[in-house]
Amino acid sequence: MSLVAVGAGIAALTGIGAGIGIGIATSKATDAIARQPEADGKITKALLLGCALAEGTAIFGMVVGILIILFLG
Image (cartoon, rainbow, N blue to C red; front, side, top):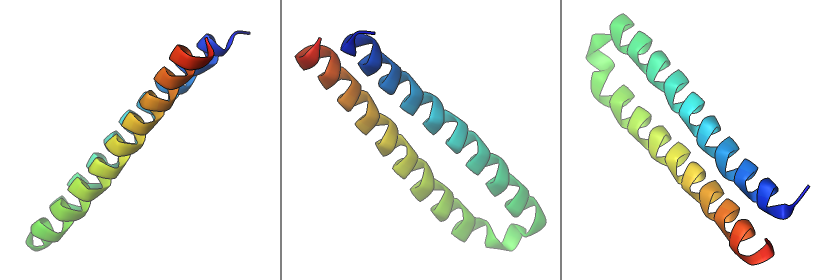
């Protein structure tokens, strides 16, 4: 197996993982807001922070995958 395939796999898996994580977080935040509407502001802030961190992880994984493809392939 070539390193280019490994790099592409890393980039794909981090994107998939971030998408699944953001979907689960959004679902749980919607449930929490439905149960306690008065906590909407706090829940939304925590959700946005979590989504930003998940996207940052996905971008980092994509960059690592691209670096593997470009420099080791």
